[in-house]
Image (cartoon, rainbow, N blue to C red; front, top):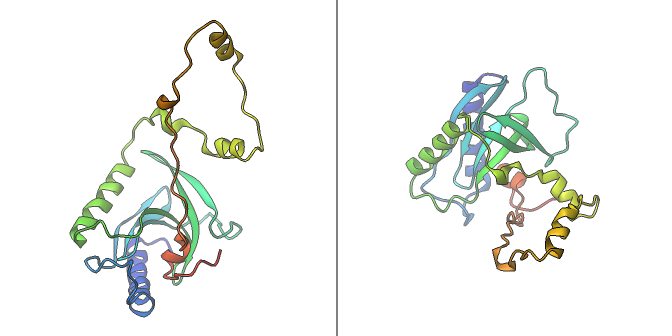
Length: 203
């Protein structure tokens, strides 16, 4: 399916049905938010846009006609290049759409005061996504390599000049000056199941 309008209509139909049949009475829903597919377009041969629901906001991407994602595992993440930088997408499967990839923006949606508020934020993300910029120093970190180091699969290279500087009497960085950043852990309800309207973690 490579028609952005057809993808938008299909997503709205599918998630309206999920909302009506599977999500009623669920406390994570924001009653001010409606189902809407926003800004679907073709980028680098792929259909891409934002899906807004009362329980999540995701970027949804479909494969190009010459791409085959069938050998990827559900939940597997892939990096994709955009003018604004690299974004990681997770492989999903949506009824009526089939295999696709999604990038989570918000879940749950409690912080949005109105549907118009959610629309503004979604459009701002799409606009920013397509604007070229230079990545900051923090974004240049190789996350995959960092993960392998933390799991003990590889050892980082040691710069012995740093030790020479310490031996020479240069002050070491104070522990309070070292900033550690961590990503939030996955919630009990997986993003994949939230996307598909399932509230039990089957992972």
